[in-house]
Image 1 (cartoon, rainbow, N blue to C red):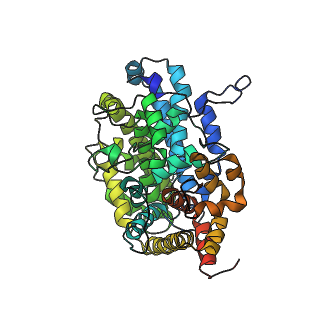
Image 2: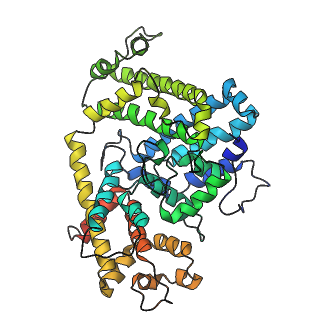
Image 3: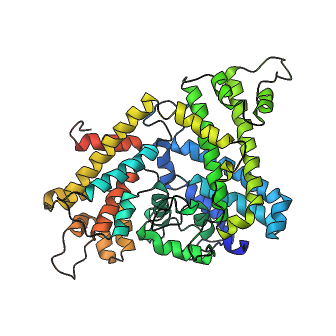
Length: 473
């Protein structure tokens, strides 16, 4: 429970930034690196719930992440102001206020930075694609089981860690080179091996084999070990997760209302019997102090959103402090907002499952996403692995040079080879002897997935239509 370790400001590459005239601390510098990154900009056209929507009132992955950031910042401020927490960590409140809130802003803003096109269904498409591919007798890939698992268990969290640490390439293998604390708070699943659904930080493959050495460095230096020696979550990742879930549930319900799928009274009927909700609805529907008029239905929905978020924020802070020791030693095995006798978070989640996700509009467009992502993977894997030089050269030529460059750098290729972009396709050829510089099968597949996972929804659709001959411009 050493917060000097949890708030570790070290970086994978020692910082070279000039601090003489820069009043920001290292975590505030992280925020600047993140907010100006291309990967953040691309989230404006990535699915939150509604794929390929043109409705400006509906959340994209970027607007969702900005709202998660706002809630995370609020949680950080509340935590630092709480005297119970101050006593637990025995640190000056003013120091905490310069560190924890901005760390939560950083981790919340990037929490979905690795998500592929078409939302979480896009993850499912990629997973299923590779499960089938590795069973296909027409292909023979030289991968071990853990390397295969990086594709069959593909996850946006692991892809995000790769984006942050390598793919935002600036001439070295450290990506945005964020602090250990920012990266630690981001990682919900510090797991490179087997998935264990019963253990909260092993529920997913949260880090690929390509980044496992970075994981070990960061988590060893932050002293994030459980009793069995395995890596455990950074305490702040619980707050980041809560921020995400709060926004996910509450704002998805508001999006469904804005789509006209149900009325305010329908939302109310599903929540009114939960402990404490009758009092909340009374406040939501109270007359305006100035006009004396009852709020409109839209105003009621907004009022309800504000009060739901407030209730869940308070619950989150109380659960974090009440379970502080278990969180720090890795034995707390709940989401903070689900650890609640009233069942509010579970009810909100079930509302979304029953009344939003099954809608024809969503499911139809998700299946479009299946066709697009599967089609792109088909084209690139066939072109690159079928052995035909002409196809290989053209396919590699379409992949972003920065994506290929990142893999060459992390594999230690010579500077001249890295700079020779016209001959990148040669690196994908089969080696004729053991001395040639060639990418192995793992990194060939890694590059293809890095490229496709980084696409926006619309770019992926357009690119697929061009490759399949459905459009030419």
